[in-house]
Figure (cartoon, rainbow, N blue to C red):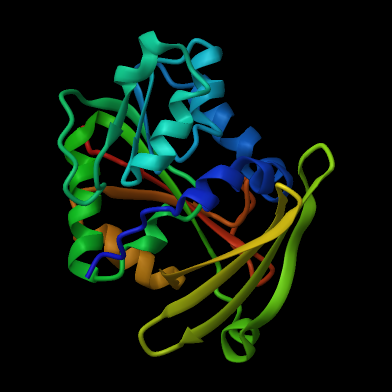
Length: 254
């Protein structure tokens, strides 16, 4: 089964405010550098609100974006001129069919974790292969599972507290319970924000899949792609027991 991730309107609304604080300083420089050194068209899978895509376009990259969520794509369109709207697609990465091939395909910020089944994971890798130019690269990232965190879970952790507009407070509270056999985490995010003189609340629940190193190596080996390397962080350090992230660099054979 694929976990269909249609972001609720309140998640899309506050996405940039939260992840500008939590995520951009982690991976933005790495992925924008990969885009900058690529000659040819680039596709970002899981383009979201255009956090990376909009900057890539401004830098002159021949960039395109794809996301399963129509709401998120509409948010991304707000950041770019109308003449670039045709570069954004609402499609599922497992079944995507685009009219061209790319020199680089990216799937940043754990997009692959939303694909539950091995069959669909392989289908996704093969769809990526078919959309790459010969010799083209596919780069995606995932988090390294923390055994302690899998065991104890997360209980009502405030991971963001700040203003989404001047004088208007936003809080996000995260809980997680993991299933180590099926390698899934059931995530619950509670949002609480000030609006029209009232405190509003909403909740979003979704599943994510976590992966281990050799599982990832075998998945790529079973696909049409070739695995070049797995880095342990966004500075391209070797994998080690201290690594928090997997950054996989794959290639379509020439």
